[in-house]
Image (cartoon, rainbow, N blue to C red; front, side, top):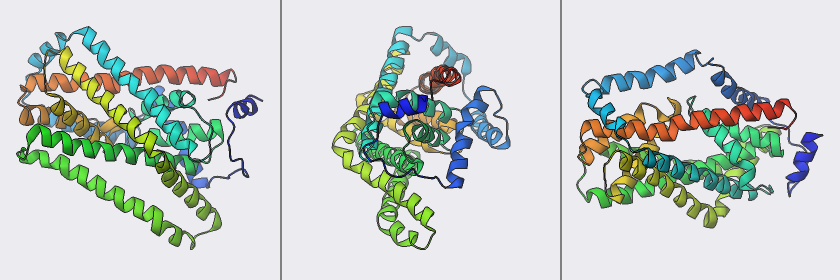
Length: 357
C-alpha cells in the first residue's frame, strides 16, 4: 500500500509495461544496496575493501615522510571555526543543486520527479562513495531511484553516466581556463599529468559517446532481445539527458562555483590566500582525481595532488598545504560520512516502520 501511494505521488508520464531487469544488473544493484549496510556495521574488511584502504595509506605514508606534522597540526589548531562552518555551508548548498540537476535529467526520460525527491537519495549515494571504491554509490542511488519511482535501472544508470560526463566536461574546461589564468604558458612539468588525465578522460568521453550513439545500436542486434532492450534504455538515459543541457549546464557551473567556494573558505579558515583562478584550479584538479576508482573518493591520490599543486605550483609552505588538504577533505569527505550516516540510519528506521526507502 505504501508503495502504491508513493507511486501515486510521483507518477511517471510514460507508464509502459513493467521492465524486468537483467539478472546480472539486478544482482549488482542488490549488492550495492547492502554496501552501506556493511559499511555502517563495520564489515568493510573483505579483500577489496582492504586493498582500497591499504593503497591510500601506503601512498600517504610514502609521500608524508618529510612532512613536519607538528607544524601542520599547529596550523589546523589555529583554524577559524566560523570559516569552517562557512565552508561546510557552501559545500552542502551544492547538494540541492545536484539534486535539481539530476531530476531535470531524469525528466527527459518522462519521469515526473523534483529535486527535493532526490536529495536524500543523492546524499546516500555520496555516503557510499566515501566508504567504498569504484563509485559504487552511483549504482546504489540509481537502484534507490528504481525502487522508489519504478524507473528502469538501465535508464537511470544511463542518466547518472550523463551527469558524470557533464561534470567531467566542466571540470576539464575549468582546469584548462583556470590553469591558463594561473600559470600562463609556464607550468611545472609535473603538473602536466593533471592535464594529461583530463585530456584522457575527455577523449574517453568522446569515444564513449560515439560508441553509444553510433556503434551500440548496430552491435546490439546480435544479442538477445532483453539485452537489446537494456542497451536501448541505457542509451536513451545517456543521450536524452543531453537535451537538458540549457538547464543542466548552468547548474553544473553553479555546483563547481560552490566547490571552489568551499576551498576559498578552507583557506580563509587557515589564514591563507590564493587568487580566484588558483583556487578554481586546485578545486577542479583535486576533484578530477576523485574519479580514480581504486580508493573511496580518491583518498590518497587527491590529498597528495593537492599538496603538490599548492606547494610546487603556488608556493605555499608544506605544512600549510598539508593543513589545507586535511581540512578540505574533512569538509568534503568525512563530514559526508557523518551526515550521510545519519541520513542512512533515518532511512533504515523509516523502512522498518513502513515509510519506504
